Amino acid sequence: MGNKLVCPECGSKNIVFDRARGEWVCRDCGYVFDEPAVDSGPEWRAFDSDQMEARARTGAPMKETKIGKGLTTIIDMHNRDTRGSQLAQSTKAQMFRLRKWHKRTTVSSSTERNLSVALTEIKRIGSYLNLPDGIIEEAAAMYRKAVDKGLIRGRLIEAVVAAVIYAVCRIYGIPRTLDEISEASGLSKKDIGRTYRFIVNELGIKVPLTNPVYYVPKFASALGLSGEVQEEAIRILQKAIEKGLLSGRGPTGVAAAAVYIAALLKGERRTQKEVAEVAGVTEVTIRNRYRELKKELNIPVNA
DNA sequence: AAGACGAAAGTGGTTGA
DNA sequence: TCAACAACTTTCGTCTT
Image (cartoon, rainbow, N blue to C red; front, side, top):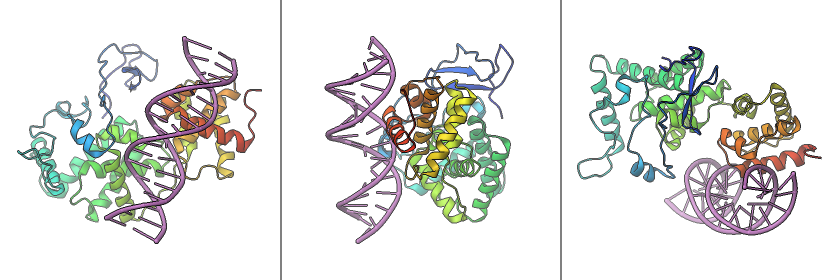
């Protein structure tokens, strides 16, 4: 299930959406699409689940890869009864299944149906996040385990899918943040996180801490930095790891700071704002990590 | 004028009683 | 269950390039 957009310049199907610019961009040749320049993500931010309920008007982002672009659902997504009250969790799950039945009326047994829905969703999110096939297979396998243990009951299939993908990405060192998975799945970070912890506990899976090194190539390429800078950033991170500088710190922030410093050292300066943007953290966080790294590792920056 | 820096106050999530 | 706590964000003022 690939993206249906094809680059008119080079014919590549490797088209990604640049959220910051609001454009579709060809990964291979850099071609920028005129249309559709519509951000499929929310234009608002939700700071808690109540705000999310109040502000969300749509479900998952509209995708070319979804049958009917994901808009075939007849039952609305608001999870409220006729008086406008919230539905109970169990009823929500029931409504969810009803929606699925609308889409897939042909599948037979309940676990079959569950798996079929889940696998479709795994593939959809996987392709949305550009995950390799192996990861998708692993996610599917883990999902099956969860089904076998009866962990899905009472839970949104999509939440379990998102949680499983997040876990597999971390295990295999494919840098995907909760934010990205949240965006791809249309679920809140809170829901995914909660389900993730539950699944990991119940399945007895050990998930290593995210190594900031994994984020370096991603950030560096998003900023158009050379391989030299990447190597330097990784060297910095390794020293930081040895010094135990990372405990409790968000891996993206540390990685962003390391990339920032490495770019400075190699004379490929990027502004803190630019780095902050691709890393999904604020300038302040980069500054804090930057200060710590500079101090603890005695890095001679500008001078 | 733009970027870098840091202080202060506020947020959501985790932890331990 | 609740309060303390750490990490991070937002906002804002000042300094540097």
